[in-house]
Amino acid sequence: MKKYLKNERGNGMLLVIVGMLIASIFISFMFFDFFNVFISKRISQTSADAAVLAAAKEAREIYEERYTSAIESELEELRELFEDEKEKAEEDQDESGEGDEGEEPPQDEDSFLDSIIKEIEKKYREVTMPPSLREWLEDPSTEIDPVEALKYFYDNDELNSMACTAIEGDMERIRRAADEYAEKNGADRNAQVQFDQSKFSIFVESEKDGSYVTVDDSLFEGIDADASATIKRPKGLDIACD
Image (cartoon, rainbow, N blue to C red):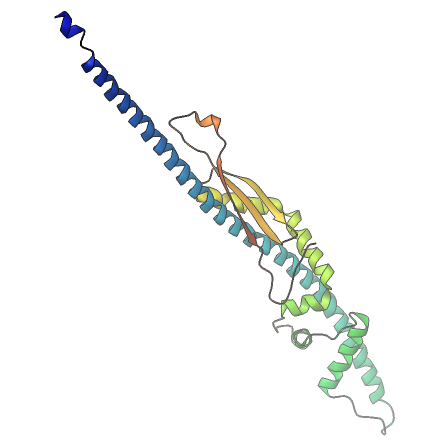
């Protein structure tokens, strides 16, 4: 009986088995944590990609709205100037028609319009008016090429300042768009949403809170991923903020 009780070979084997079982469970938990980190990283990256694309799209809409408003204001002023010049030209034509019979006949419609356009170019912009604007002055229902109009009404510095100021001044709207798409794709938050003026792009950093078994979740910060996207420019305009 005493000999059996003193035999510790069985007890040692049992301890080894129990130890291996505990180690296996711990290793399994570690693999589970590593897997959660991997999944969280993928979610963060997907969220950052979606958020930055949404933010860049919102930024483009913001500066396009600013451009549209500026074009409409200039067109209104141009239309008023055109009507004034047209009225003056018609009065001058009427007065010349009341003179001697030997005077030159009235101008045809195209020549009459050209003379008005030349006067407008002297007073409004000392550059040649683009075709779409000339057509619009003849017929207000004509579609205007917005890039042509912008280049006629403003120089490059003015266009750059207009776009960059509009985006910088409405970052809250851009952040809301980024946050919405980050949350839709599983992120817990966006740590950063920035407008990079030097590259005319948006930068977003998204975070996903980790969930761990082997350690306390509060010991680690969120698992983050970042992405950037260039804000699309209109064809024919090279917008730069620096």
